[in-house]
Amino acid sequence: MNDTEFILGRLEKIAANLEEIVSILAPEQAAIYVDASQQVNFIGMEDAMGILDGFGKNSASEMIGKTDYILVYDARKKLLIDGEAYVPAGYLVMKSDYGLKGLDESDISAVMAELRSRICTLALGQYRIQSYRLG
Image (cartoon, rainbow, N blue to C red):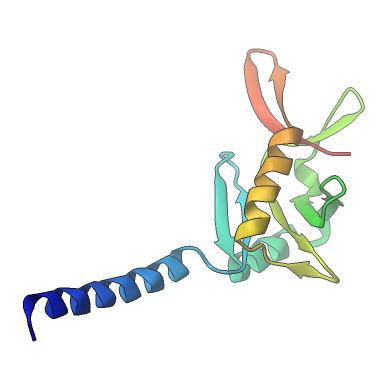
């Protein structure tokens, strides 16, 4: 075995290990979760189901525009301001297709674009918070 074959063999092993690491870090089916500190997280389906279970009877949802994506949130965290409803954090976004489904890579970029178009800044006295506008 010459040096080139040895190097190519090592590179193939590194590439295989890297693919495995990426598949662990970025699951094929995921959900988007905006946590209490308003950080956007990509989580696996098992974690998403745990969050949904945590909402319990207080779970509420709405479709995001005319897409197949659904925003699920704890209704106790909804803010009503001047007749408008907002959710500042603690919501989950998944695909609605005869039940809740995970998002794949192409869905995630579409969801992020939809979310950006519906996020607004609320001024509450001296404080400003980003919130998803319901409705």
